[in-house]
Amino acid sequence: MKVKKGDTVLIISGKDKGRTAKILKSLVKERKVLVEGMNLKKKHVKPKKEGEKGQVISVTTPMDVSNTKFLCPKCGKATRLGYKIEKDKKFRICKKCKSEV
Ligand SMILES: [Zn+2]
Image 1 (tube, rainbow, N blue to C red):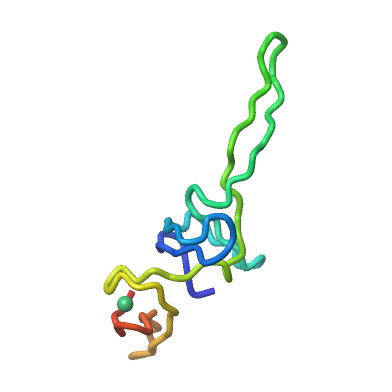
Image 2 (cartoon, protein in one colour):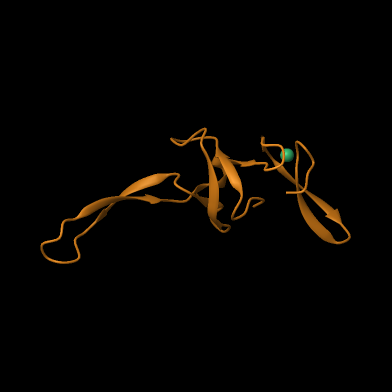
């Protein structure tokens, strides 16, 4: 996966389509990303003590990385990432503006 934690992505499909947010976590094995405030699912929380009310909370759940597109911090465009190898070091580059990101 080319995107990583801290990257800003544009959601390109699903109910959050068109929104942008930051990646909180990347789940490489599952090829999923946890994007801040996106793909919210309602979760019922049972009361812990007697007399307390159960609650419904929204939790951010991971989404498929293919539903997101990297948003370049340099040119501000949704783009794909490429790699550049220089002096045995690998850099990620924006395919649109060719900047290191
Ligand atoms: Zn760019």
